Length: 180
Image (cartoon, rainbow, N blue to C red):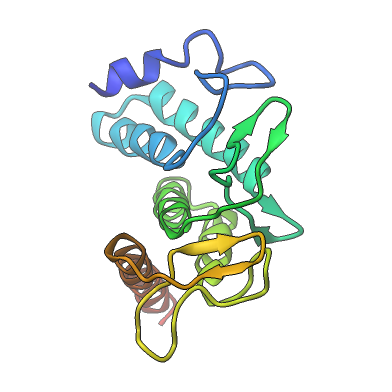
């Protein structure tokens, strides 16, 4: 399965638009994450290289002035441009996991920096400068819209927040253990 995934990029990986489709929609960081992880497990350098290359490209598309600005679902990302809204918590969660996996493999601290910046999207370092995490309820709002925060707090959004919180907590714990 991982080889099939990797083969989708045979004709595009070295192009200016490396994605295998004409648009990038939601959950996009899961693909390079899977390629990096599978490449590590299978000890397939080319698979990991492609995953890192795609992740670097997505980082270039989704971090603006050091703020995580995921692909919006009102138009997605195409060669012509990127929709800014609506932004969803699952995008921050996916970017966090992909970047932490890349950091674990490469030992390149900039991936951890991007993971932390994506995490801060939940707490207000985002295009609306508003927290998506609800400090009063412990839940997570369903995303950012052009006019502010979507006040719904669905399970997918709250789970994206909670798993992201765990991922970052474990990363920081392990980092502090190594520094001690």
